[in-house]
Image 1 (cartoon, rainbow, N blue to C red):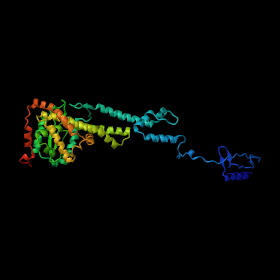
Image 2 (cartoon, rainbow, N blue to C red):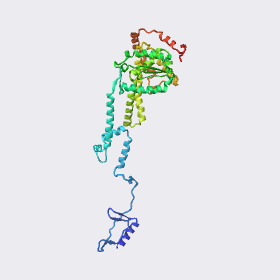
Image 3 (cartoon, helix red, strand yellow):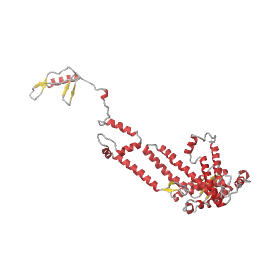
Length: 425
């Protein structure tokens, strides 16, 4: 009997039937029936086999669901799409979503926030990072002496001089052969002008506890036999001026303009401010990268445009103003300062090949130059210097007496290259 039942069962399967194991019912194609009986007990009794039939149907393509192996059922695909959509949003919005908590499957945002410990830890780290950085920044703010400005400064004068000494040794090792000897006429000329300016520092120093007076800086003059239009001062009193700049300074007044500007940078500790500002630069870049998802390179670029370059232009303006006071206190002609910087801008433009008429210096070109430059535009620089001239001339008249009108013209002839009878070797 069992054999007969097995044969009938195989016949049912052969006719494209199937068994529903949940209900224990054999299904056959529409209109077919399985007749006969099978044993139902141990004593061999039989009963009719009651079978239900139904037609074969296939699911529509719209009802088909595809799921990866091991993937949970339910609305998991929908939540994956939401996660992908959330990852493409701006990081600051994603951060706000994490702070507020996100909706989970059938749960509230508060439950999701409690369960999402990794997000909470990330937010705490960000808050500590930015909060600590902001606190450190505030506690290291100071007023720039003599200027209406507040700056971040966390480099001490000793640290500044130590870093500058390392820079000085490296520069001398690389360029020592190009430095003119101390007895050279050009070096002696620079020493003469610089000594007058250094003696006047105490009269114009914006702070009574100026580090230049405390440390008794030993000023050293170095003239390089190079035609670059450059001059700079390292902390510790190391003055460098190139032959190209010195040749452009045909008068002592013009040379005093350059040297006083560079000395003013040290009086105001702009070098140390730049070292401190580098930390702010990288901190802000990290903030832009974390909050807005910018790449680190783009964050550095934006921070330079918005912070470093404007600060550099402000420092140059401050050095111009204090330098004008310093050269005036040393009894040089302050009227030569704007004339020299105008001539310097023209020569610099000719050397770089940018002087192509007024049209290039207008409109978008001028706007871009004002944003990307480390120095103020020549027009703005001249305007600022002329606005300070009346005060400088009054101070010079009180301190040094009347200013001869022809003194600068005579000095210009005396110091022109063609007037010199020889050049010491």
